[in-house]
Image (cartoon, rainbow, N blue to C red; front, side):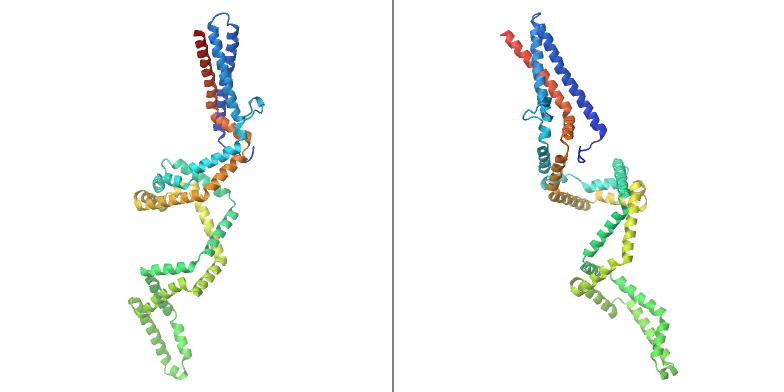
Length: 423
């Protein structure tokens, strides 16, 4: 038995095997019974004409039972171990059966057109919304099982390797991301809605706070650059006060006047920066170098490590206790999202459309791989094992064929004997 042997729940397989074995014994018992009746009727044929009818029935039933036994046995093994041509069909044709099964799946289930047509019936958004709004409904058992599976997987995976892989994946995605045009486009979108104005206001307030906190530095700078005559007449103090007052008045005017010339210049600076981020090669290169330096920074590495640990712990908490994860504001937000998914037709249409496109795309891209997987898996199965499994799966029906063949054969033999006797 190979490692690729198909698996099933043991109790279900054993129950099917026991039922098949019982039916096989019954069919074989009927065959032996007909043989015994035939011997008895043949020995009593001269005692009464009725025994001739019994003998005809038993003889034909015995032939019919043996013929069907041969046909059923020939599907799975050589009858009585004799390698008769065109017998043991399942073990000999195992690989062909696997290929035919794989292509049957491909042609009838895994074509983009069929999947797209079937996906039209599925309301993915509605199902997600129903689950989110009523997590303790009929799906709770499935949710609990899925949560336990997620928790078990997270706990048993190598945290160091998984975390390293995750951090490496995030870092690689950041390295591949051309961030400069994205920043430029974001700035353009923000300026169209005047969302850059709070930034300018913040810069003005920041400059005012810096001026208030560093008046002594300004006065010292003027005093150091003044000559002795200016110091003797205290002109440097008045000059320092005038500079500070003028700067403060300028900042107050900039804060109160949205159309102040300096604010307009700041706006023009934002526009130029947004343009350069999108179209200037030198600016984009500078941003790229800055991004690479940031990714290589030890602080960013530690931040990514902490981010992974927090995400893993949050997933584990949610997986171990999904009911608790659905409580509080987060749970309310999920329930609100669930109601939106069920009630908003545009969102439902968008999500269902996305699900259909994703599923059809996956089938188009990986359908042939799934076919090869099925075919290769069946080829890797042990012939005896798969033969036993298939035989046990259909054993009851096959044994009914043997039993019906015995009875039908007997009735046909009885009919023929009756017609011959009458004629």
